[in-house]
Image 1 (cartoon, one colour):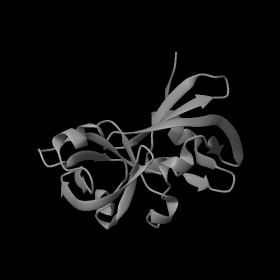
Image 2: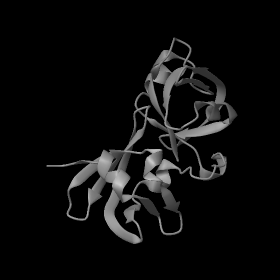
Image 3: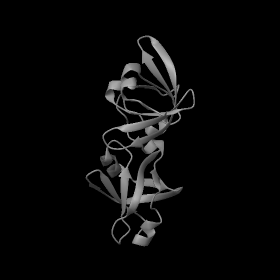
Image 4: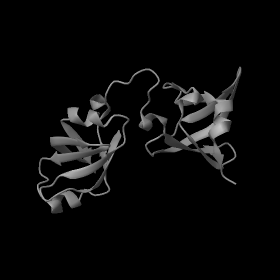
Length: 169
């Protein structure tokens, strides 16, 4: 599961600046190890500053070492993931899932979730609809989302979706 993107080295001792791809950056403080590009790293130190996370790994002790990690994704195995509350989902579970709209008692397949971008205020879902066109929408509570893990299907409110969706021309 992807939990962060390494932005750049920070300082000369191998610390890296990470953009967290999780709703709660404090979750990084509980990590003992992570994987970057297929290599396991033990986490030596975690520091939070605003919405950014700064990490130190064993074996990464210089700016040059840290530079080799620039732009790479930090992943963890599912066993290291935090427990989710009701109504929370992992982005990794949503990408590739089918998405449906619900209008009263009618359920219609909208398409497939292709990507999710995190911009701070709200994640933006990118979807390919049934006709092959792309559309996007901010993931808001008013969509009343329900995720069925077994079916890998996300259900959202049709009317709220139509208020916020942006369709390809």
